[in-house]
Picture 1 (cartoon, rainbow, N blue to C red):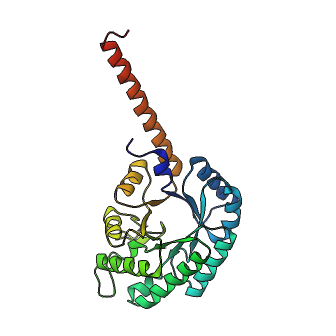
Picture 2: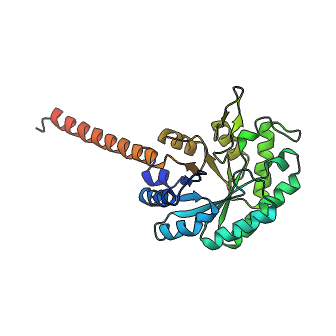
Picture 3: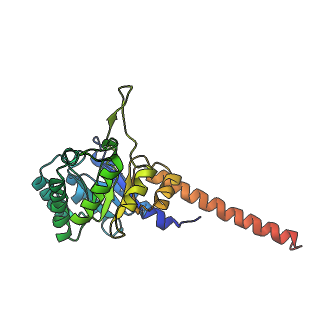
Length: 264
């Protein structure tokens, strides 16, 4: 295998964000994250304290979403939500930009909004991932093409102190031509664009649509260091299956070589 289990597992932010998530599902999800040794759980603000209790000593961080999923909260609400999450044990914050303000070209507002969260989180030694929600940005805005719009957001995030830029929430559903709602989430194009638009100081996180091991590996190859996922167990169980198949194949090849040399 090109990458170790630990390298891939420590890319995963295990997502526990479904609107109907029960207390039991939260607890089971935290235990799963600890079992598989992922980087973090990404959870709703009310659940931070309980998750921190469940994951204490496991090496798995607690991440909380802020202004989720539409980024529409007032800046002070986002700042205070960040403060509370950090007090409860969050080590990472995944905040959503105010998409409408960005599309309006109010870049000063967008930067102040991000900076308020980054400054508060950093006061508590927590790190911040800033979510663009790229499915809403396919037509660009504020006189910019889609790619130039995302590049501008990357620059703003870096100035504001973000530790990561992130593609999506996983809940950015857009109405399709047939009337149904769907989303793409992280795409190869956007990951490469975002990686190229930030200095090495800012990392990139993929979210939405990465559901198998090959997808996780592809995300890593494109330069992302984190990936939001709900299919954590399936991804990492597949890694173990491939690892075992590779090991078994090597053993068989070695035995075959010995037989061919008269070692029997």
